[in-house]
Image (tube, rainbow, N blue to C red):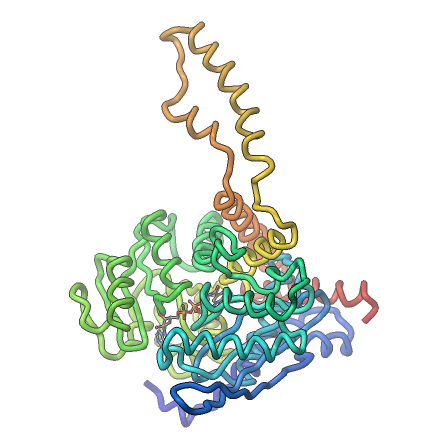
Length: 479
Ligand code: NAD
């Protein structure tokens, strides 16, 4: 590995700004408006104390609001020791453009708490989360109509349930209290399919990419997802679900899994469920029985494969390793896994990069469905499902009559009746809405990518589509 100390790499926020600047350089937007869209509106830093194990521990947290061209603003809350203002601001900017790209009616925000969740017991994490929530609610930085967080690295359904409950305790008469946060468990106002949503979105993004042979050819690949060799970094929420669906439903092979304590490789494909189980029980991949264990985990990012899915941290592909990355196609399941310098090196090499603001937008898309569900106070499909089934029954009755009439000459395909009669439940509706969103957003990026000679990659195309929408929104509001 090159000595990173010698290489000047921009910070995460600078990286996002550089990518933004490249895109607006290709757009006809007044200078003042460009600047307004680029800057982060506000970042609130909070330091609070919680009494744990007999003494007071002080924690630092952030909530950053990048753009309020639409409200509420939306973005996850991350728990990690490395959380800092620069990172939270970069992530909140990405949220603005992500929401615009997939047409969820939100501005961009993000939050973070400097904490290693592994250092605390569950009841301690609850105390810390409730106190952090209290600080944010007090300033309307958690609010159903102003700022709606969601899970991110180190947080999940459990933390979101605590946040929702804390907000409800502080706002006892707010009938929309549950809409103050998304990613909640289904028994606490969540929606079916939210936990898997970001990984599912990565799968749908890849499926859509592989529907366009021209685009696949740009990555020097052919065919569909079946038997494609995938290396994935991070088998957490996003990485695990993406790996699970891509192997079980599309026939791809996971030939490498990179985790914080090393990596596993197997040219015949690793058993995703078994590795996940091992990580849950042992904390990392070390000691897993099958495949080969590689102590230097990041080196596996450089191994031969068809698709590389970084699904853990930002900045993992940087000036120090970009020129050694062999994957012809990278899909950024994590936020900001490539620095702007690495992006440039890979672009010049001809690597196709499906950018983060599109690739991991499945989470915010399904969060949007959850928020709408909370505000409408009714589960999706509850009114229509049986009525839909009754109408389908009419058709089936007629087909059965025809079947009897035609005797051996014709009969219904096995299972047709069963499949056709079943009205869609919430999970199916969520998957359908997510699939539609991922397809439509890809097509809007692709159109710009193919139509303009000065737009060399999908990332620039994604930024152009998103920035145009944010600019239109600001123009309509009259700032
Ligand atoms: P997570 O905490 O569930 O999983 C992260 C995984 O990465 C864990 O398995 C962890 O062990 C692993 N990891 C940590 N450090 C690592 C290292 N140095 N090398 C390799 N692996 C390492 O987090 P997540 O929710 O899956 O988020 C992952 C990424 O996806 C983040 O960039 C996040 O911003 C992005 N994202 C998440 C969501 C969501 O809905 N959860 C939505 C959009 C984007």
